Amino acid sequence: MHILFVTATRIGDAVLSTGLLSHLVERFPGARLTIAAGPVAAPLFEAVPGLAEVLVLRKRRWRLHWLPLYARAAARRWDLVVDLRGSALAWIVRAGERRVMAKGDPCEHRVRQLGRLFGLDPPPSPVLWTAPNHERAANALVRPGPPVLAIGPAANWRGKQWRAERFAELARRLTAAGGPLAGARIAVLAAAHERAQAEPLLAASAPGGVIDLVGRTDLLTAAAVLRCSSLFIGNDTGLMHIAAAAGTPTLGLFGPSPVEQYAPWGECTAFVRTALPPDTLFGSGYHHRTTDTLMDSLSVDMAEAAARQLWRRAAGEPALASAGR
Image (cartoon, rainbow, N blue to C red; front, side, top):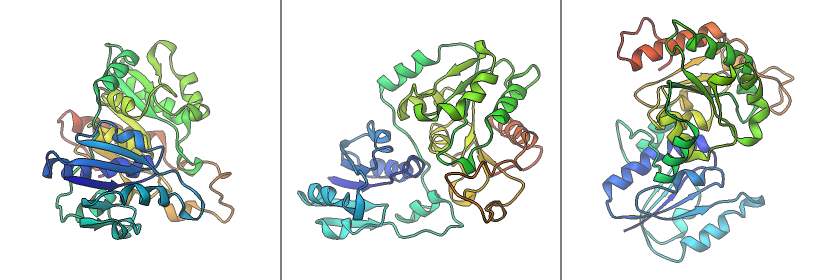
């Protein structure tokens, strides 16, 4: 059996699609999977069971990036085509069955939207597959020792990036004596080009207690690192979704982005959002490239309370109040 699975360009959306992919792997054992994804997200799929090939969709003007994929996909008849990008591809190639994603409800989580494509309720949770080389790389980067608090301080646009100084203060509180992660090491994860966003956090952390992983992991090695971390806290990014899919207790920090669609998904996840609602954050002079963070109404105290509550839930202790999902 041959399945063509067309997924997202962005890392976060691609991670969220892996629950549906996992369903296909389990439903059709022995099937050969061809996965089409954007260049940044494509490495997420290199260890998927039954993988035949990953086709990289590099964006081009006038949607010309679809032409090479059409040419490759037209070479065979597919038993099933799943197109999460709602393109015309599924209707052009020869296929026994087609499932094409339509535009979803902005008030419904993306994972639920994806599950509905196959009538799955509850929807399957995202999952990431790693290979032994990713596990070895993670073990080399994070040696045995005290627990690890993983932090993702970067974001792909400034508006949803919580200030690094606040991450530093939050980490200090959680790892201080008497804190829920007393004595824990702090692992800072970000892409190489995001070092400037992570630098204030690295500079404010005690040298012996910080693990600088900025630019040092690929996506699946990051997943392996996060899988053995005790807690992850980060902005609304692909890394946040990787942490949740890895099964790590995950706290997402939200402000201008739609938490209803993109809250971290999993059994032990939560979010905390700015005191100001999203529709009040975008002023008349807003520009996504130049406007500073819109996250300042999310205080360190608010984030700490949410982190402590999530930690109690992860440890099986009763929750004191509701924070997030």
